[in-house]
Image 1 (cartoon, rainbow, N blue to C red):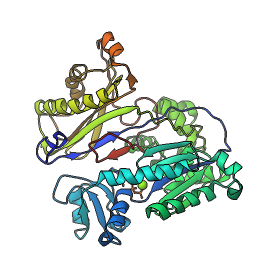
Image 2: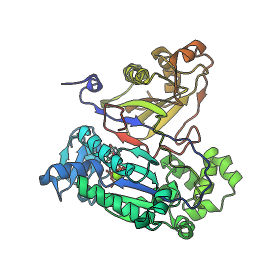
Image 3: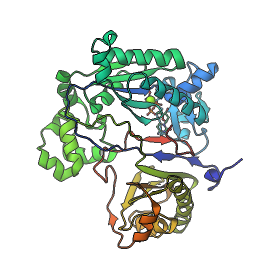
Image 4: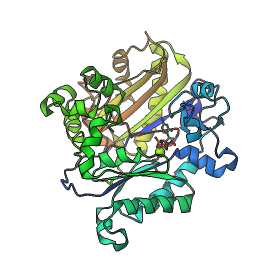
Length: 419
Ligand code: DCP
Ligand code: MG
């Protein structure tokens, strides 16, 4: 049966985007012990676990090969063929016609995720989930107080990986370091089923050699901008004085200045308050004119409003996202003075946002809306009205100085629940 999530233009690929952005807090301890755990090929591994016939084979979870869907997850056997998440399924099929394509089973992934998170809680209550399959853990106290760990976060990380394997039959990779940025970087280095420790003395040399794209917080758009400025690696980035980076990248410039020196004071934040809500849709046929785009956006807006109402939330910033037919993605944001609380307060802004893009001149395959800087209490927002809106220029990476939404989850889910 088709749900209204699926009703737009035939087969629909729903890609909701849940952004969880946490405030920074300045806890200047450089002797912290932070672990970042990230499950390996998460959706695909759950499928291989539950379906023995998929094991050892290239497996793709996501859209079917002849649809306009994309790959959500793929097994490591599929990655040998160059397949990766977010690649169109049709392309994945061309690169590996023998791959098995399966549709996602979100309930199974959420169940596994809950169990993984409960394992984390056995080790520390300072757990910050980033998505269904990854989290930061601050184990500073646990490493110190429990004799069997002898002060070693690496031992804790390995034990967690073992417990996950024993109890869930899934593998996880871990990064261990003295801050979140480095722990996340580390967890990716020995994937799958690996662990990597970055010690204080090692960080700067390692970062100098890395291409900037590998830095969490540097997305495609920032990479392009950095490359234009002659910044290709950490070493190049490090040559830039702080004020010049801030001139070029705003608040994020300070973040880049620090991370390339291995400095990241953000604490592991177990407050799971959601900071943005959104909905987006990929269309069976590209939309050609702004009239049909606005109609589609109205429907997306209905979903968004439902979700905002469920949270009793009102928002300050509305972001329109669109993906052109050639897969290029642009976003445009607006922060009206009175906030965003009901459908009308959002839909009235859409034509202005759309004209800030090339929609209409170029065909569009995906549209999305999200709201950010949420607050509770709709009534006070409504009372203020929504006049004097001002359009903000492209928010490719970070419109609000927060860490770029690169780690943020793109889920194939019609429910916006994180866990
Ligand atoms: N996901 C998605 N769409 C994306 C990226 C990811 O639906 N564009 C889903 C499927 C993934 C899960 O989120 O299984 C976790 O994402 P990861 O980026 O951690 O990727 P994987 O766990 O699949 O692989 P790995 O972490 O081993 O690289
Ligand atoms: Mg993963």
